[in-house]
Every structure is written in C-alpha cells, then in structure tokens.
Amino acid sequence: MAPVLVDVRQKLALEGGDPIVPKGYLMHARWPRVSEEDITSLVHMLRSGELTEMSGRDRMHVFETDMAMWLGTRYALTTNSGTAALHCALAGLGVGPGDEVIVPTLSYIACPAAVVHQHAIPILVDVDPLTYNLTRATVEPHITPRTKCIMAVHLHGLPVDLDSILELATERGIPVLEDFSQAVGAAYRGRKVGSWGKVGAASLMAGKNLPSAGEAGILVTNERLVRNMAATLKCFGEAINEKGAYQPLHETYGYNYRANLLALGFASTQLFRIDAFTEERRRNAARLSAVLDKIPGFTTPCDSEKAEHVYHMYRFRFEPEKAGLEITADQAREGLKQIFLSEGLPLVEFQNQPLSDHALMKGSSSYGSGWPWHREPSFQRDAGPESFPGALDAIRHSLVVGFPAKAPMANSEVVDHYIACFQKLSQNMRSFERIAARLEAHPPWHQEARLF
Image (cartoon, rainbow, N blue to C red; front, side, top):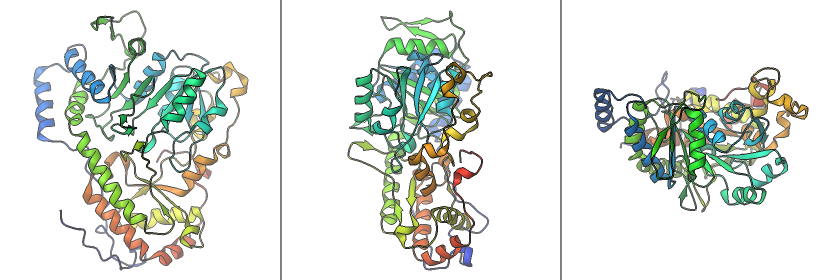
C-alpha cells in the first residue's frame, strides 16, 4: 500500500493549510467487507427459498453451533438484534418485574432498555475513566437483596476485569450477563469474552466486528436451562431436551425475535475471517498508539496482559494541561473535533451524558404509570450526571477515531490518514491552542442527551 503523502509541517487546514483529505471529502472506511464468497453464499440461500427460521432451521442450527464452538460455549441462540439477545438473556436468568440489574452508565441505551423490557429496574453504576468499563468498586455499593444480575459490558472492545467482577458475583450469588456486542473476538486470559458469565449476548449488526447483512444478535451459555428459558421469550422457538434434540415451543407468548436467515448467512461466512480482521485492528491500533504516545497530553486506549482488546472503537484521551496548553478540557475537545473535521477526518463522541440523563431513565415512565419504577418509590430519584464522576471524566476528556459503524481500525489506509493528521497536529500545537481558546465550550452533558 502506498504511503500517505502529506507534509505534516503544513499549517492546519483551519488556518489555510492543505487538508489531509481533499477538501469537500470525509475519509470513511468500507465495512463490512463483502467478498465473492459472501455473495455466492447469499445467492445460494436466495435460490434455496429457505429464508426464514421456519423453513431453514438447519441453517440456523449450523450457525448457532459454529458460534458456540468458536466462543467455547455449549449453546447459542440467534435473535434479530443485540437488544433482543440481551432481553432474552435476562429472561433466561429468570430476571422479572421489580428485580434490579446492574448496568454501566457509559454504555449503549439498549442495555438499560432491555432491562426495562423485562419490567426490571436498571441500576446504573459508574465506570473507570481510563478503561470505560464498570469495576468491582463501582458495582459493589449498589448491590441489594433485589439484585438479580450484573450486566458486564465490554465497551469498545476492551474486556471488563472479569476476575474481580466474577469474584464479587460468586460471593453474592448473582449471575453475570456479558454484553460483548463491541467485543466479539476479544479474550480475557486467553478465553473469549461472552463465555465467562452465566450468559453472554451480542449484537451482530453490520457495523460490529462480526457483521451480519443488516441486523442480528447472538446469545451464548453453557446452561441448557438458561438457553431454553431465553428461547421461550424469543418467539415460539425450540427448546433443547436432555438428549440434545430440538422440540418446538408454543406455550409462551414470545416476542418475534427470530433472525433473518440472510443476515445470519452473511455472518456465517464473515465468522471465518473475523480473526484476520481482529489482527488488522490490533496492528493499526498499535501504529496509531505509537504516534500518540509521543504527543504530550494524549493517552491511548488501555490494554493489559489479561485482556485482549479488539478495538471496535479507538477511544483516546486528551488533557491539555499535560500538553502545556492554557485551554480548558472542553475547549480542547471541541477544538480537536473542528480541526480533524476540517482535515476530512471526523472525531466523534460516544455519549455526551451518562445514561441516567437519557429520556428512558430520566422520564422513569417506560410502560406508563411509572412502571417499573413505581414498584418502589425510592427508585423515582433523579440520579444526575454528577453521580457518575468516572463517566463524566471519560466523556469530557476523550474522543473516538472515526465513525464506529464504518470500522476505521480495520482499514489501514484510513488509519494512515489519521496518523498523518495527528502528526500534523503535533507540529501545530500552538495553532491548536489558539483555535481552541476562541471557542465557547461547555461540558458535553449540558446539552441534550445523544449517543454520538
């Protein structure tokens, strides 16, 4: 691949220099990568006429078996989305009305939404500002006799510190549900995430590390009872009996969470290439980190000997005081966004507020009449953003490279351009300071809640 030919000694584009990407364009990665094998497989499925779970159960069973074997679990259950997989997982654990589920406040809105779907109460907890994940210290104070599940979200592709979370869960007799939507392929102590807790759930939508042709989800577990209880919620599906045979389920109301077989067919062929894409993400993240490590004020994503990051998102921190700049953190964040956008390379936020200030949680109405919160009046409290200092620190001081659904870290050419832009920034730090100092910037959580 030809190198990116950019004179990083030039002025920033905002000050009259040539942009890294030609003016008028934004640099995007292409994701998912569609191969001839993918196309051939989908055409074969179309011609077969087996396009639903009702007519193509064998195809669904093969994909579930492949996923279970790859992740190292005994069972897998497909759904039509990650949210549905979370909902089914909660049902599989026996979570019900009025139960409490621990959820990190820095995570996708689908996490607490799935809890509310089950008429349970999401209890939001803070995160570590460097890993962006919940910890034992943030979880333990919120455990009560009503706690029926800890939802451990492996955010951005970095596994949660599972040793400490599972130790706490075992001590208190509480099951762990792993949300590995952004961490498919990540490992902890050499074992893939999703397989550590009592149940794991993940989104396979087209923007994730393991993409489907649109939307899909997967639930995995080692317990047949959990799998079968989850299947009763899915939609008149199938239970697995003691001999491993499938038998129809029809005695429950069931949601229509059945997956589109074309989506699963695409994910099936992608599964055999995900390890190669994961290695590409890691190589590109290492190259980018090597550059940022040399620029004062920047902190690269956390990693550890125990956890293998898969970089669904590359989220870096910037603290202007460590770079010797006399601007606020809010000015620095907004300045970085403007500078990179003018160079044709977007930087984005992941949530501008803890989930406590999103409409679902703040309104506390969900299904009307205050359910499920009205079951216990104390839950109608207003947990403002100041209740989550770790999340606020992360939100204020960090940004994500590119649009996550476009998988920038899986595209070396895109990463080359971001590297060039960071190098150009490092040559123009005083210009950056001057640009940022002119901005009237405020904490992100002073604006209406958004996800990106």
